[in-house]
Length: 509
Image (cartoon, rainbow, N blue to C red):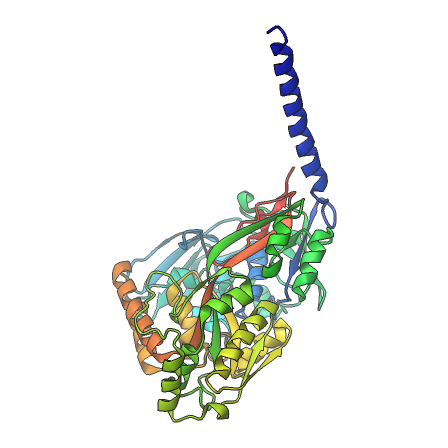
């Protein structure tokens, strides 16, 4: 009996020793920073087509713009538009909006932001082919004083705050806009990072902007390096070797391997990002709604998800993502016999369809291969063409494709629908099926002018049903996104669309 206290002490000692040893091993396993403690190195699957806010409408470009710029509003984790450069606002009439700006906001060159900069920036966005639809409803934009901006819309407009949160409406200095400054070569915003250097095909660097107006959003690292590594397995190896600290797009087949690797963490989130096979509705054959229905009905989404993303996705048959206002009415589900009936009714010989599927990422190529096999059962002989992301985005925007695997997300469903399915998106985005349907355009206008949130959702559901019936694309799945990173890195938090605000990311102290 007298030996028990000694045994207890000995057990406690061993337990403490084991915990300490385990902690030491974990700490030893965690890799040091790839480029020093003040720098974060992020592996990207490709580089943006542009980092000028009005010269692109791509998600990869948007991520860089989020770091370099601010807009009047931003979207929070609840998908609500909240003030950013705007301090407060009022809506004195159905078409008038008054915005009070934050005082003392500095651009990266040290100049203070005023109302004239906001006016010039939004007018520049309005004139842009790429992002003009995020300002097209604005009929007048004026500076009432140094810190007050008034915007007038062409009627009641429900999505104005979401439009003003889009990176296309990022605020830049009026003096540089007037001087035709090259914002792609030298970005100039108010964001938490300022531009460093862009080495095409290799990397893009940014440095912390210590003069950022919001101390809570000051970047945690001194600099950030975005390395462009198109090959997914190479990104994984780079993280394992300590050459990069974060992998922004993780190869789905490597997820379990990374989860089992000491010193590496993997984070996942179900997102509103929507993956689909885009069909160019202007191409002969694909301009026939029955052909498009046949191509939809021929594809079983379950094997697509299994092969492409190792099962990490939610099958979808609706043309619209799972957000308030979406609808399942009118969807075309998988049914090969029904697919053959649609094709027969269309009067189009499936062998005559000339379809090359363009892709820019490995997991999307795998999706295309499953679809290629499914379409072969329908008598359609499709080909697949891989290319780097900038070429892919350029070809998609100009309509130089028959089909493509594309992803897109937007925090506002109305903005999402307009960006993808409105005639205004033709030539502006790579994810557009290039359709111009009067019923769709008319219902978009109704939803835009419906300010009551409950009634607007009902109008969006009507719009969703119309688009489902037209089958302009082949919906595949909503993404579960993954980020992998050094265990010493913190706050790699994904937004609902899978993006990361990299000013939040830093090293554990």
